[in-house]
Image (cartoon, rainbow, N blue to C red; front, side, top):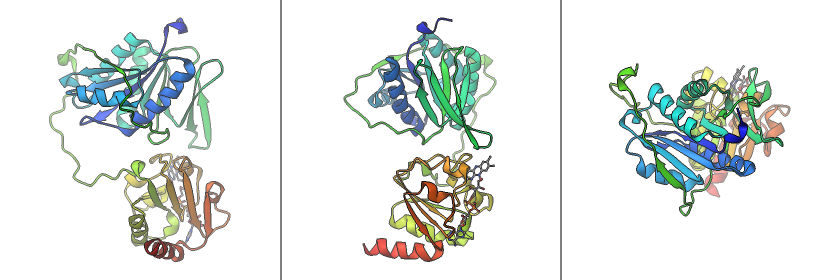
Amino acid sequence: MNFEDYKGVLVFIEQRDNIIENVSLELLGKGKDIANELGEDLIAVLLGSDNEDLAKKVSMYGANRVVYVDNKNLDIYTTEPYAQALTEIIKKENPDVVLIGATSIGRDLAPRVSARLKTGLTADCTKLEVSEDRQLMMTRPAFGGNIMATIACPDNRPQMSTVRPGVMKRPLKDEENLSLIQKVDIKFNESKFKVKVLEVTKETKEKINIEDADVLVSGGRGIGHKDAFIKLEELAGVLKGTVSSSRAVVDAGWLDHDRQVGQTGKTVRPNVYFALGISGAIQHMAGMEESECIIAINKDASAPIFDIADIGIVGDVHKIVPHLIDEIENA
Ligand code: FAD
């Protein structure tokens, strides 16, 4: 294997109903940095159907080239056609690096593709860096989040990684960016597909996307009980924010799992993160420590959350939050 033959950083663009998943845009931002460091091109790969307009939209986020497949078999995600299409494109492009979002789709797709390419995959990364000898250093939490492991792929190419949503910064849209847009045809043998989607039933429950919120008001076990979250909703309301939580709250059944921040929940980086009655366990901090401004309220002055807080208030959350709401409303 001659590593010189592998060039480019390839980002898989995940879409659902022809709406791009945020993590794919975040990866275009990080992918551009890596491509610049390696002196290589950034290639975005979009799979789906009726997606010519979407390919143009993708081109506004910094890729040198957008390669897309428009095929009815790729309308809704299923493993086989997606794994086949992405593997074929990677074999043709021979990229140095392949980045995929660590979403439910990415976690299903990436290992299949890496196995077909006979290369390694570092799953669930939270940090990507290029070393002095041009290797991709991929960092991820390991042993229950107690250590951060940095993994390289020195003997194979491409170097593949899935990356957690919300960890990397999303690039700004640039309508002037001129990517080369290339349509590629893939031949599928439908008779060999083992899975067929017969019907799609969408969840009627309102979708909470804490990853997109500018302000998160996050509550922990210290909030005490489910009903006390009404005050946190009120605070989030005056700040045009969203309520999120620690795992202890989800485990207690006070909020749904889609609100959970942390290693086994979502990774978020809002402008403001309120940590209310949250101790600051390593698994929680792994999901929110990149927030621009962290405001912690805890009655225990030695709580670890204060180590990473920009503003820390030692006191009872039930007394401080109503004052905060009043002050903001009267400001
Ligand atoms: P606690 O640790 O019990 O902290 C409650 C805090 O509230 C205390 O600091 C206390 O001083 C304070 N408090 C109490 N009353 C008040 C009051 N009236 N006013 C102000 N402060 C008050 N956790 C996550 O959050 N997200 C994850 O994704 C996650 N994944 C995990 C994965 C693994 C493999 C493991 C082993 C654990 C994981 N955890 C996760 C759990 C994590 O270790 C902690 O148990 C959890 O984060 C604790 O939640 P907490 O801070 O709400 O509760």
